[in-house]
Length: 382
Image (cartoon, rainbow, N blue to C red; front, side, top):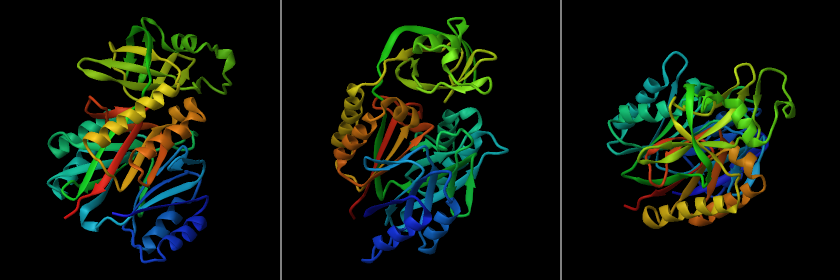
């Protein structure tokens, strides 16, 4: 498999780069497309379709080729995978629950290939419940499945991210790239590197992804106190406002690594937190230390371990990195991406997401926040 990356600020830019990439007979069959929701999705899909290139697409909150980060732009990774080795599947979740929509994707994967893996992108699923997506795919597939991916972004406007492919796009869609594991090796890791701080606290009242009280105190007040902020510091036009820095909570579990849960929004009316993922009532949580270079070291070490033990070489690397990491890391983000890229030294594409799907080093495939999800692909030799 040969991978080539192109980028631009408009469909016209992409056309020029695409034509240039195909001059010497290169004929890609699949395009991994991450782009700003403000740009013309239909025009990009139509352009790629003219060359019979299938599209796996998601809108983003910033996108990158290797460590070159762009905003309100388009990045595309072109792949010449034989068409028989993969299948795209798109499902709409408007009138169905997330679990059963994802179950359809899992069933499709199992029917398409006896040994399948899934790279997925989702819009805004109901109540931001990415865990139901994982559970549904596994139920439909009939057991544990390899699942990596990200929840689409929307340039941090919180108006509705989209996933898309030829002729289809939706803010509540689920897009799956189903891959034949007998032909393509896939491995990766969901890693964050954040360190916990302070004592364990209990979620004393929650519903879905909304946390009302922590240790019987209003959740918003407790988090604002931890951040050293007051409500007067926050510009608000209504009762619900962004928490900005996105300092994450670490959700502790029995016999499994902690999973990150980002407090995205605060509600001044009921003093609750809206988190990017479910936090069940009774859960144990801890706050996290602000990021430093040790966080990057942990991410790179985890990727290096995957390379050493699972997949020594890669044709392409895809990264789904949480937007809250970008906001928290600032200029350190570029170094993290650069060092991750150096692990396999393969073409790399990615975007900043609203949630990540993947497997932690000692865990199972699940839904994450504030995490860097890295997946590497390598075509098998025959």
